[in-house]
Image 1 (cartoon, rainbow over the protein chains, first blue to last red):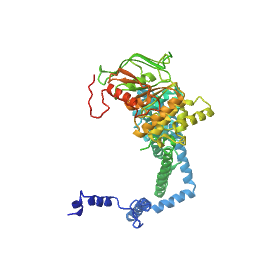
Image 2: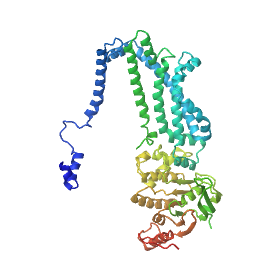
Image 3: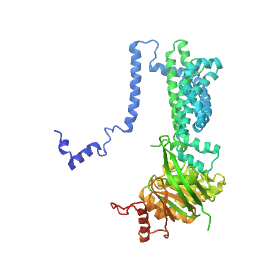
Image 4: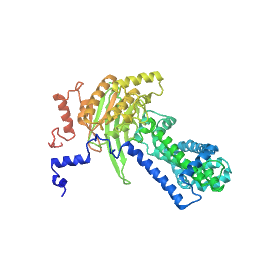
Length: 286
Length: 260
């Protein structure tokens, strides 16, 4: 029988238990504790290295002629940099996202504030929004080509469609869930309608709006790539389709995918910085 | 005799119930007056409707019977000349302490704003926290910000709905002492809702004692004790016990009182 169970309930037993659950701070630095900075770096880096090794091995073992190894992809990226294509395509894609996304913010946030505040307008518009929202922006591609032709306007339109719904819907919800006490305080101070909107309703909703903006930017970046595969002749989406069509350059296909992933990560990190502003941080605490 | 700051006449309030046709009477036939510069506490059992009464006087709710007047004019909506301090803290979390306090001063010049903010920051004891945000403050400090915001707007009347209800005992004691000091300096009319009898006796000139729901005005108790109030003096304890008895309780734990 374990000595623990014999000691259970005695003072010595509980002291032993406490000692086992919370070991005294170690003075020896080796082996490092599972929470040490070293391990927090080693875990993700090790996992990535394992993944890349397995990928490289799988390609070699399958004797694939087309699918690239990680090394091929890195050389592909350098090739794109040397030709000046990488910067050009990244800028082209970001340009479209910026326009479509900005348009979605400029229209979606005020529209959401109004629908969140005026329940009768919400009644009128909500069914329409709920039906349009689940339609994938990809399904709009033929329509976009019909309306805008093969131009920058088509993917910008698609990005706008993809991001305007998350922005609008989260803004509506933010206004509807606003704490009534802020509204009553605002009424008490005699705010006019415009002041009420921009000093209180907008500010009280901002944390939840920012969350919607973050989701919208992720979706916008997903959609730009899909849109560029069809409607235009530049950008990272175009790179992927073009590399496959013109000579089955799968190293460049995967290079394009890697760039999309990295830029998506950077965009998300940038939007996350917004959540640290004093104007919204109160909305995320606890 | 000076004109009443607040008066209510045969005021009644009936809320609709959850089931159709069901009604919940909350206030019945309340007639009372508050004089300018007076500190009045509304005391009654929890949920009796005293907060509802304050909300009607402040213009957030319309009564179903009777009328509320403030400075002789019938109340129909909230008014910036009378500021409400909320139980759940109505300080705006997206504004700093300074910006919150100057919220009611949008029409003033920048210099005037700074001067007024400095005065009330000092008065409520928040020096050094002007640029902090509410999330960085304790509950008591947030309530101080809200009181400073109300005072800065220079209202004639301040309505307070259990403003210290969520604070711990020691903070509450300190807040009461500070509120008494501030009221003595500013001489605003204050209507203060609480279910805490001790709080009412420590603060008020007069205490309106309400019955269970539907609330009627059971009695008005004059608390003619000098400030700062001595919480051990026989007269303080006598006033306190009088209200305990009015509310059907004993000041001694475990002793039952026959309600007359």
